[in-house]
Structure formats: C-alpha cells, structure tokens
Image 1 (tube, rainbow, N blue to C red):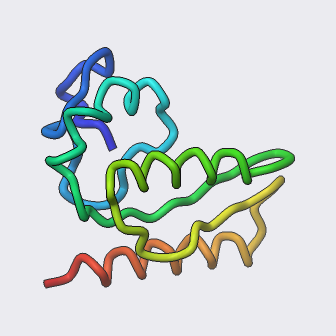
Image 2: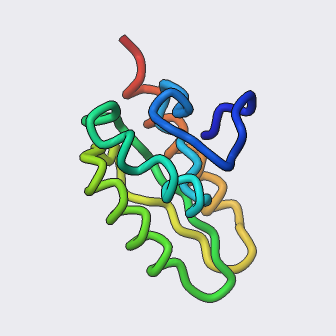
Length: 106
C-alpha cells in the first residue's frame, strides 16, 4: 500500500505501510521503490490476491519475482480469482485476510 501523503511519482522504503498489504498492482511503484527497499524491507511478510478475467498466472509470477528479489516472505498461497468472484472466492479472500492479520499479532 502506498502512503497517500506521498506522490506515486516517487516512492521508497518509508512509503510502505508496516503491514503486508503492499500495493502489488502498481508496476510504476515497484520501478521507483525496488532498489531503495532492498535492504529496508528484507523479511517483510506479504500476502497476495489477484483477480483476472482470463488468467492470473502472469500476475502472480511477476509479483512473486519482485517479492523474491526484495526478500519478502510469503505468508500463504496467493488467492486467485478468474471471472466473477463467488462465495468460495470471497471466503478464500476472507481467510487470506484473517491469516495475514494473525501473522501480524504480537
């Protein structure tokens, strides 16, 4: 997630909020923040939800490649939804959020 007080034209380690809901959907953000974040965010947890109309594999692969380079740790398997989300998909997203929150508890 990007700090809304900052411009999206430039981002760095201080623009990541201290929970794993980083904005995975912004390639520009990662282009600007990747190198400054290499050391500042090592070991940060993340979780991923991807929705696509036909396919999600490329998006998941891209985010996981970036997260691997940043040396973040994935908390759970990505939740992917293709087409219209149904009750099962919403439940999977709820579980993803609940698992992420549980990992953040002291």
